[in-house]
Image (tube, rainbow, N blue to C red; front, side, top):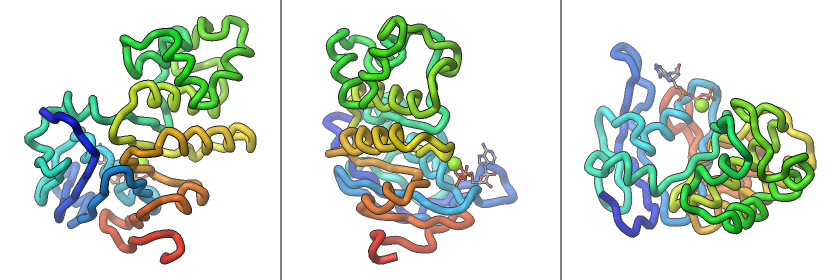
Length: 230
Ligand code: ATP
Ligand code: MG
C-alpha cells in the first residue's frame, strides 16, 4: 500500500510490449518531481497512452522499473494507486445518471456542497445551472445531451472532487468552441496546481506550460525539455 503519496514518478529503462513480436515502449527513462507537469507528445501510435497505462499499472513493465515515491510500483496495490490518481480522459467515462452522481463518482461520500464547489472550480457550475434540472439533470449513457466540452468540464469537476496527488490527462483532440476551450484551460490550470500531472498534450498552450516535454516516437523518447528548449 501507499501512504501519504507525494507523487514522484520515475521510469528507469522501461520497456514494454503488448504482443511478442513488437516492442511498444523502448528503454524509456524520466523522472517527475512532486507537482510537476509532464507533457507527452508524439504521433499516433508513439506510445503516449501506453506510458499512462504503465503509470496506472493497467499493465506492468516488461523490463526496467517504475517507481512511485521511491517504491517500486509492482509492489504497490492497484487499489492504492487508483486512490492516488484521477483521470481526465478523451472519452471521459460518464454514465447514465444525474450530473450530481457523475461528479460525485470522484468521491462517493462527498456532500452536495462539495459537489457544487468542485463544479465551480471546474467552470462547470454555470452551464449546469442553465440545464432544466440543474444538478439533477439525467445524462444519457456516455453523457449524451451535453456538448463535448461540457463533458470535459464535468470530468474535471469529478477530478477536482477526487483531489488526487497524481493527475492523468488525455487532452481532447476534437474541436471545442473557443469559449469552452478557455474555460477548460483555466479549470485544468486550477486542477493541476500542486499535483504531479501527466498530460497527453495536443494543445500548444498546454505544451507551453509543461515543466517537461517528452517527445515520443516509436516507443522511444527522442527529445525532451521545456518548450523554449525544443
Ligand atoms: P494516439 O495518439 O493515437 O493515442 P499513442 O501514442 O497513445 O497514440 P499507444 O496507444 O500507446 O499510442 O500505442 C502504441 C502502440 O501500441 C501502437 O502501435 C498501438 O497499435 C499498440 N497498442 C496500443 N494498445 C494496444 C493493445 N491493447 N494491444 C496491442 N497493441 C496495442
Ligand atoms: Mg493515445
